Length: 553
Image 1 (cartoon, rainbow, N blue to C red):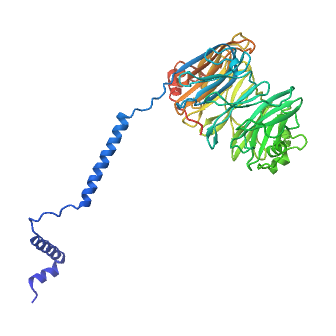
Image 2: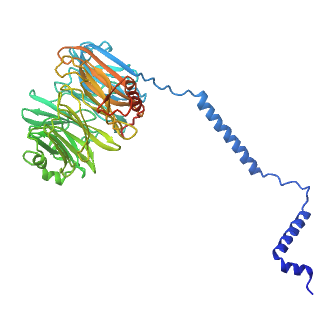
Image 3: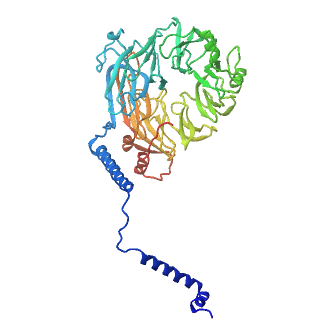
């Protein structure tokens, strides 16, 4: 006969398993001693605990020292505006930016000519020059204080600053000055001292056209070299100088054509270097490899491009395709290298047309006809991360500002903006939304171009408000040079004005002035370009005031 427990187990097997589990647990608990203490912690566990609290204490101590004991570096106080004046002087059309005093704010370099500077303890005679002579100066971008100033040349015909160059001993920068006699001087922008100077062997009937900086290193001194292009009678020549010592490398190079200013060094997509310059109502080109080999008498490591070699006429050195496709019967006024799809393209600006050429095969991407451009275009961003080119078409009351899409040549924005001839150039500064803030000069409303001492107005434009301009300032003195720059990354957009006498033979007051863009916006006048006014004046100012800026990538 089946036992009652076995019968119940067969009927309720799960219940039976639970009961057995409870019995096993009960038996285990009965065997354990309830008064027995838990096992002691191991020595390793104690060490881990001590190490944790010691590390925590050290971290808190470091935070305390950094936060309260170690003083934070003083951030230079940047004034909203400053001005420095020179009496009885004339100014050169030159402004450059460099962080001279290492305070993370760009400083301003400029040139002027005077008999005796009131701000310098060096005179023209101290440097061996007759009076008056050319002075170079650097002032702080933060507050306008003088950083250095010294006489540098008897007179200056050309000046250009190089981008920082890497060398074994560090990063070097230089500003190259050419004196009227042909003396070539390399100036240290951080101290104002001459890095080197070298007298030129130019003839008496020679005029200097332009400087070409950043040539591939020929003399193996670790720095790019310098090419000085000249015109002797009707022939274009060039001289090569060492970037490290200033000594002449090789002999004079003869380009064999009546070239003009605005010389470019273009690198094709195959890595070949070519000199480009306007000549005889066309565009001429020279292989840099051929030129350097002829000047130095030794083989160069540079390359030639087969497409370009077939394009350049071996007798006249003109680019055949550019001459045939370019419809303007007059000379090319400006040429620019601009970013393209796979390298750099070439923008040609003539008196009656503008054309963008592919940088490799020289096929035109677009042509804009019926133009009268008398000032070099500038680049900016109308749409996010999309380059546009600013064309100032016409002069006087007929002047118009055009923004063209660089890829297609389509007109993105245009506005009549009368101005006097030889006015200051336009400028652009990148904003945080990957567009650009543009700055244009023009005449105030109601002012004619034939009035004496006509003031000029500085207008600000941003593509997010295409129907509005801000009039930031009115300037009645003669403007020698103008730049809108980002003096401090992401913070300090400003515009710099160099003003002085219009006639170099009549010295007068020379001034360098800095204005913060954001502070100028507060007192600006809103100019509506159409009848629709969707925003109030204050809302427009607030929109421009909230703009943030970014450095070039």
